[in-house]
Image 1 (cartoon, one colour):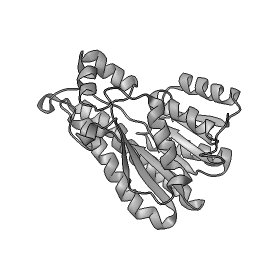
Image 2: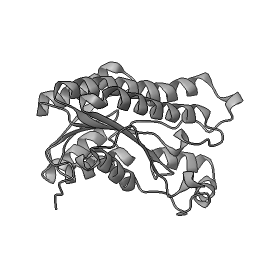
Image 3: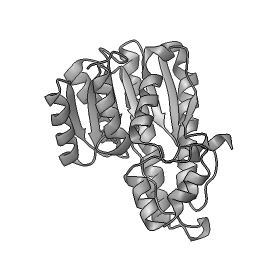
Image 4: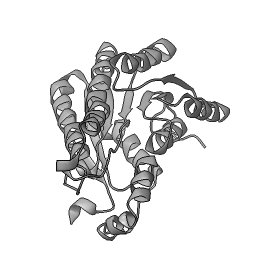
Length: 254
């Protein structure tokens, strides 16, 4: 059954080929949005778009890396050329990097994490905002992390990048509020995804340790983060901007 939380909207989702991004594509389409998906893996994007179209949804994709400005622009341009506007954007693309003590962290780890998580967000925001300004406003949600609110061990570049996501969120929210663009962020706790599966696989016992620190005592499913992002993007949050919403089972409340 189709719902109507995002009915008639055009939504761009980055990092859409797996995890939170793929869950968001399915949910946003179910809630009535036409979705524009972008990620680096074409095989997964094509399969997901095919799945959505088979269910009657409007969906297109652009292969790209958000750390490349031209690729971010290409995804926004696809929304404009296909649907005539861009109403919503969920900037979900991101990577985790190595779990290594700061003094042992390699330059390339820092560069890769910051290029994807920070420069990638910058690239997306500037093109999304430009498109929204041309069409009367819009709503943006950026995917940060509880690591953007607190510190966790042996992940300094990731923590710095996710704090930067919150900084960009607040700056853009303040700058464009009067022009009809809302900008918020979600801060997921431990969520089942390729990043966390990799971290847990390389660090036995880590998932149990993190879950023990989470009042709800479990790892979130990607659909739970997608639901929070959809709500923030929707008109039901019309007076909400510059907010960071933890979706973390109570982790940051400790």
